[in-house]
Structure formats: structure tokens, C-alpha cells
Length: 138
Image 1 (spheres, rainbow, N blue to C red):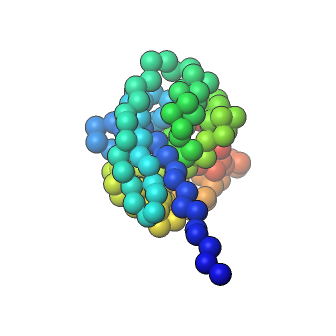
Image 2 (spheres, helix red, strand yellow):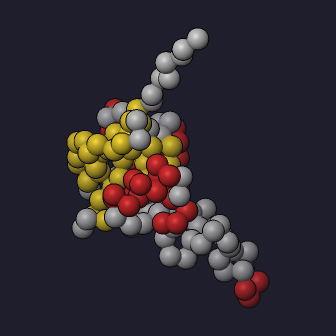
Image 3 (spheres, rainbow, N blue to C red):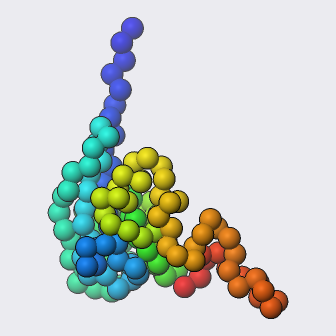
């Protein structure tokens, strides 16, 4: 018996600044959209944010059909707004868009962690500090 495999299409958003992933999502102005289907990426629209409000940004992304966001640093309020909108977030990564898209497809975004984010190691543990995971507080 033959079963057709239902290929899913995913829409990803990458905030871009000077040709690379924006270091801080909260202050980016432009987001590039990409669709991923059948192992291939296709560039789509560019969205311009007109507001710095976290919930307005999340609503704009959701309205554009974004399912996944790759970004650098992000504040708690923006993270929460994206979670509430049902957008999967991969934060604290950096690099050029094409390299990040290939890493996402291969499940290797961990190779593009921002400097200091390491592999989930804690920062500030010396001198009695509790330390924080990269991305746990902004």
C-alpha cells in the first residue's frame, strides 16, 4: 500500500541588520521571511516593524504566518509575546542568514551560538554569583 507523505511548509523569520542576524531582536526594524519546504528554502517578503511593542511585533509575525523565529538576544517581554503567539523561538544565535538557515535545516543551530552563550554553561559563577543561563534574563 502506498501512502503519500504530507510535506510541511514552515515559515521562518530572521531579523536582519547589516546583512547579518540582528544582535538584539527588540531593536531590529526589518525581518526577512523564508519558507522551508521539501528541504529547500525560498526567500519571501520583508516585514518592517513600525512599533517596538512586543505584542504588536508578535501579532505582525503571526499574521504573516511565521512559525519559527531565529534571533540574537531577546528580552523577556518579547520572548513571552512570541510564545503567546505560538511562534517557536531559537534565540542567542548569530551569523549570516544563509548559514543559519542551513544550520536550522540540519539541526545544528548550536554551532551558531552567540559569543559567551556556550553550550548552556552558566556565567558569573565565580565570587559567589548564582550565574544565569544565556537568555534567562535580559
